[in-house]
Image 1 (cartoon, rainbow, N blue to C red):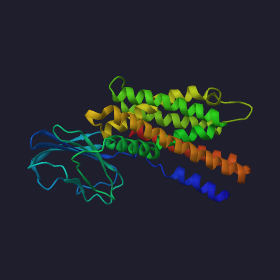
Image 2 (image 1 turned 90 degrees about the horizontal axis):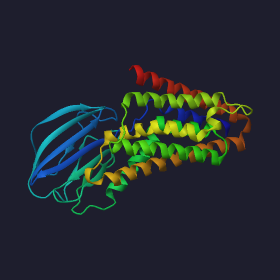
Image 3 (image 1 turned 120 degrees about the horizontal axis):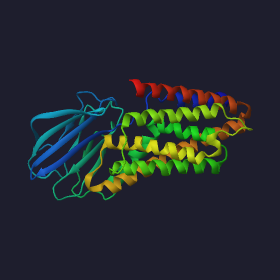
Image 4 (image 1 turned 90 degrees about the vertical axis):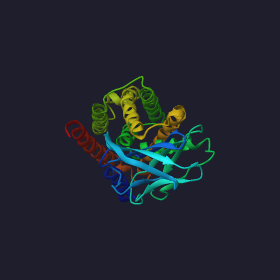
Length: 325
């Protein structure tokens, strides 16, 4: 049991070699005038996509002329002019050579005079149907799942939440700290996405790494008779760092893109997805700690120290990489 639990902790710490790996691709297909469409294909430079991974249009649509290309952040953006004969409803859109990819792709389809469709491509389902009458919950489902995946696979945010659980004692103490973190990153996520707030992404990512390193140090230096700053006022610390993490969430959401006509829905459900994923992290972390306390109480402190050093090493690497790379 002890070895199994320590192995689980080791796996959790070994997985995050890079932070914020979740950078879904984004395929936008917009009708500008009857039969005249613009297609924008944003391909992340990470995620297992190859140059052979290319958009597949409805059968009666044809690309006109060469695309224009530009680099945006960590994605290559290609813009195409497309001509379609007739209605695209009922047709398939997707990607070729997508089966080996390690990321999903969001698809936004905007026909003239019809609601936006928010669809999702996966390696297992590289083609989707453009509906004549899209499901009203389509956008909500798509961005909720994206939010869940971002917190679960955006490893810097994941490690921050895990560190809070490892540092603090008592369910309500942890609940208050996580709630403060949630409120704070929701404020900056919404404010940045709507254009009211903004910070340069590179320094923000560096400070996010430092926030995780700070908690790792707090865990190592934790003493029963001498509460650390983050133990005395955990909700204040979590709120302050949560504001910074919100800018990180906003940067990831900006890379993904938002459907122009459904920004409130997409933003709300993305945030709800982040919170759902966060609850999963807290639940799993508490369950692992409870199993340790119940079946291997003597190993709790060594396991916490091992986890703290692992988290600290990873976050220090991220800080150096983001600051000097």
